[in-house]
Length: 107
Image (cartoon, rainbow, N blue to C red; front, side, top):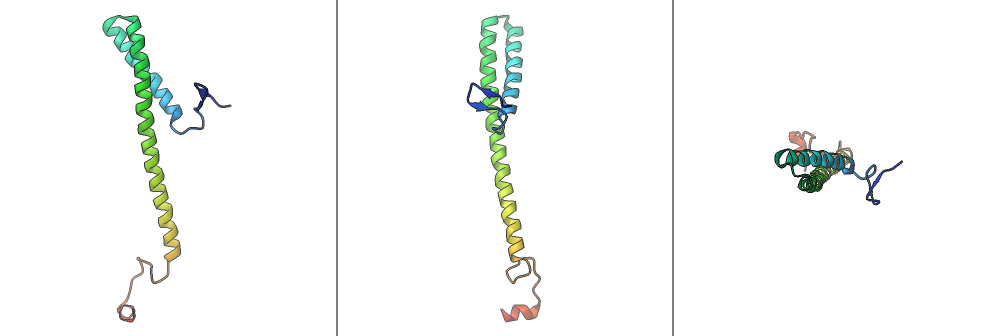
């Protein structure tokens, strides 16, 4: 069973969506309560809480998506390196193969 936020954001299947909503709600609570304790203005504290939710959620969303993109790039590079190692292993193109003096003079 999936949970859709605002009817279109599938929180279960979209990477980083769940964590962003959770951190956004925590940021909303902290900022709204902190503003209320500092000023005792209820309406303004609710406005600060909504702004805190949006800012915290978007901030963590971009942070998480950036890290996810970096992780996917590193994973793709590692997969390609493993494929090249399997492809070139034992051939003359293998960079780890030690060349002796007689092999160097032949090539």
